[in-house]
Image: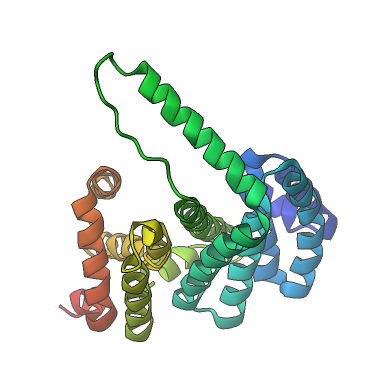
Length: 282
């Protein structure tokens, strides 16, 4: 990965080449998005915008073919990189990730009817297959998702994806120009109380609208998720604990919902009381 980042930063056309080639396939769109973000972070939005325009060409072709994901990933990652370069604030950048997810859902609602219909058709066929394969006489009650739920899920996926792409780009930047800088920056990531209140109010308001809007509400949880990861990494580093604890944490986080809820609550507390700072003082 370091060799790829070094090649990208050799010049504009090297960055364009990698971004365009990566963007031609859905599997590696994230690499193209991270390349664009790296150029923005290191050289500014003007230079990054040139690379972005070229990288958008394959994404636009994918839109014509019926897949809007690469385009949304490319634009969302560029947005986050621009916010991080302008503000040097990860909390504000995570708010931009929420905005990217919401805008993705709204844009699909306005312009992606065919794409949504294709997803609904695929899900309906999948549900039918599951019901047909069920044992005879056994009732399998599976309700098809609504359009609002699909849009929220796609928006949630976008918010997470663009944040991961930006993290990769920031890691590349630190690897080349500031070794160890990303680790220190990530470990200190902490939401501010006003942003915490804003996200909680928005998430609760969306949840109160009904089950159709639960995925939309989860978009507001994305900043808490990444702030929680940063908190856990920071605490493990301060306590000089074995890296296996991080592995156990991520396994538990993936399979146990109570851990997700507990992490959210701890992040809320941390936004007011700075747990890492208090531990350091102790």
